[in-house]
Structure formats: C-alpha cells, structure tokens
Amino acid sequence: QVHLVQSGAEVKRSGASVKVSCKASGYIFTDYYIHWVRQAPGQGLEWIGIINPGGTPTSYAYQFQDRVTLTKDTSTNTVYMEVRSLRSEDTAIYYCARERAGDYYFDFWGQGTLVTVSS
Amino acid sequence: QSVLTQPPSVSGTPGQRVTISCSGSGSNIGGNYVNWYQQLPGVAPKLLIYRSNQQYSGVPDRFSGSKSGTSASLAISGLRSEDEASYSCAAWDDSLHAYVFGAGTKVTVL
Image (cartoon, rainbow over all chains, first blue to last red; front, side):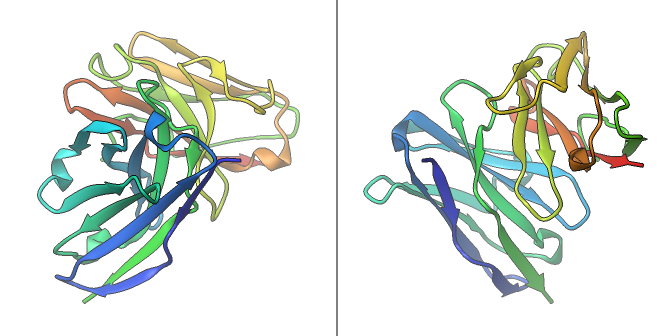
C-alpha cells in the first residue's frame, strides 16, 4: 500500500527557513519522481519542483529556484524540501506527489503540510 | 495568474451533465497530455484523468476527459452530490520547463 507521509505543520517568522519531509513507502522509491506543489489559502495549485530519487533530474519552477532546495535520503526513502527567506506569501499547504518516471502525472499525493509565515 | 485558464465555478442539478473547460497554449496543452485532479475540501488532490482521456483506477466512468488543440475539458455525467469539489487541469509546459495548473473550478450540486 502506497504511502507518502509528510511532516507536521510549521509556524515560522518572515525571513526564516523551513524544511518539510515526505517519507515514501509501499513502492520502489527510486522508480518514481517526487514533485512538490503548494496551495495558498483560497488559491489554485502551484508547482514548485521535482526530484528524482534514482538520480537526476532535480528541477525547480523559475520563481522558486533561488529559495528552494530539494534533497533525498535513499536510506530512509525520504525527500525533503527546504524553503529559505520565508515571506507571508509562502503561507500555504505544501504537498509532495509522486510521478512514475516519464508519466507526467501525479498518481499519489501526500497529506499536505501547512506552513504559516507570520511577520 | 494561472497559466491554464478554467472557469471559477460551474453548477448543476443531480443527474445533469456538466463540463469544465481548460484553455492553454501550444507549449502546454497543445503539445502535451492534460491531467485532471479532484480536490475535496480539506484534503489532498486526487488524480481523475491522465493522458487527456484516461480514467485513473477506481474513478467512476461518469468522469471523462478530452482534448482538442490547445484546450481540454472534463465532463461529469450523472452529477452526484459527492462530486462537489474543486477540479484542476494540469500539463507540462515545454517553454516554462514546469508543470502548470489551472486555478481550479468549483463544482456545486444544486
């Protein structure tokens, strides 16, 4: 049974950093890319970036490439997303989602992590 | 501002057929598959339709997708109360090198 379990809610001050984890189980970790997507309150979904647990690529949406870093730990089947220099507009639910390599769709999503940025 | 354009809302009565449009450009919908996600209030999105017209496992056949040129649509036939949700289209964009979404369409069952 596939699971993507994300870390818990975070409250951060403006300018701080946050690191969210996404632990995968129930499938071969290196066979699927992991994407990160966020949803601000009342807004649509916004793609942040992709990491390939099996190697390259790691890629970011243009608007995030200076502030976001995606990493992986294949020993624990976990991927991480770090967002630096947080601002109030980063308040959102952050989701991880998996893509079988090359399919270009997300067949399973994590439960989401609420990140609240206060000034 | 979302790259893909969807109507903010559509509504229908139980049993009715509703359609949700999704408009893009040659670099996204025009050259790539479209996927549709359903999001019930307070929970993560779920895959409904992939590769423009393929129903994901377990999705009722009341849901169908199509694509023509730079537009796509999702149809829900035999509308049911449990279909009240937000529906988002998505596609890879070759120019932006990014996965792009529509802003979502809220379906209301009257």
